[in-house]
Amino acid sequence: MLLDCALVKENSNIPPATVKRLPLYLQCLEQIDNETSGISSKKLAEIAKVNDAQVRRDLSYLGTLGTRGVGYDISTLRNQLQLELGLVEGWSAIIIGVGNLGSALAHYGGFQDRGFGVVGLFDDDPKKINKQIAGLVVKPISEMKSVCEKYNVAIGIIATPGKVAQDIADQLIQCNIKSILNFAPVLLKNTPDVQIRSVDLSQELQILSYYLDRPVLKAVK
Amino acid sequence: MLLDCALVKENSNIPPATVKRLPLYLQCLEQIDNETSGISSKKLAEIAKVNDAQVRRDLSYLGTLGTRGVGYDISTLRNQLQLELGLVEGWSAIIIGVGNLGSALAHYGGFQDRGFGVVGLFDDDPKKINKQIAGLVVKPISEMKSVCEKYNVAIGIIATPGKVAQDIADQLIQCNIKSILNFAPVLLKNTPDVQIRSVDLSQELQILSYYLDRPVLKAVK
DNA sequence: GAGTGTGAAAACATTCACAGCT
DNA sequence: AGCTGTGAATGTTTTCACACTC
Image (cartoon, rainbow over all chains, first blue to last red; front, side, top):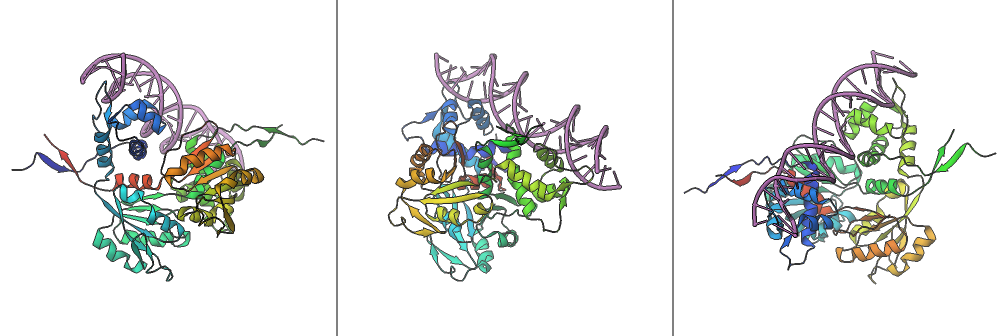
């Protein structure tokens, strides 16, 4: 007999502002000791440094997870967050560019722990090809396509210099990759159906700079 | 005679959403060839991938910079953006933790170019102390305070493992640092008057993961 | 009593659309 | 004619406040 289930494309339609906070909540739960099994929105809000109504509203998009008068069960909450974020699918990722930043990313334990397997490292510098980093052998970029097909890679992480980043992005799209995380300080052209997120380290500093206290010499009539 | 100016604490009060886009505009301007001297909000919007009314509204917070019927003068715009973001002050920064990520940050040219001078690298691993990276000698963390005082350091960049990040943050605050850019995957306690921005690499991936196309097995009654 | 889930209000952000300047 | 600067309209996000459940 068939299971009482159906394969449907979930159109959960969670607001973007909420999606950005879900990984944060997940991280908060990890910081809680293992003895506690429940948590209130108030407590979680305190750890995540957001408003408690925010927490309740955000979590309510995932369904009715809490118990009135009691709170949320931590392990249910964690499972639901992981499910909603697609972390149980076990996506494969590759990293292109194994300079310092690429190596840092390859070593970064947080990925494997959180459902992302790095299955390939690529670089076109002959000095780097065949080097072993974090248990993987660096391969030339020409082999990217076959690795992507073999492991059904979903995510490409660009850690190359800016000059070549757009070219790499184009190649990743050729490899049928649907998500790109870009660390190169350039604006990648966007392509329909491909999600691109960019992390620009110097932009982060510039934002901080704005909020640094400074007197300003201002013209006064 | 005195200049027709006064030293006032500017309370420019630019909305946070706009502040986040200012570095983006600055980057767009850098990508334009040197021959062109003017740009319209429409063109800039295209490069930055935002709406053109957005560009005009954002820039209008910096003052009346454009010329109706003509557009914006690129060099005026750049100067004004740099001024507003506080990039002409030449803030000094230090990096704590010189593993792969810290090294990547130390080598990252984008900082020096954009008004941030990295004046110190710190680590407590004896194997790393005294190593030279990107023209700087790695020093033990115990020397942080004296370097901060000497160079009047404004920004601390944490690139350590998560375990020690909070401890380092506390020490940075002791050093009178007012802005922290944290790359360790932990939530730092916040302190009044100290700006903390965290970049969590794995959170970025998790957000991407949400938007990856996936069918979801959903219970159906 | 404690704490969720959620209408309704308030705050914030984006976009439209056009008057006004060059 | 072309393009800015900005009221007004719309859309999104946050927060309040409270009915409801345990």
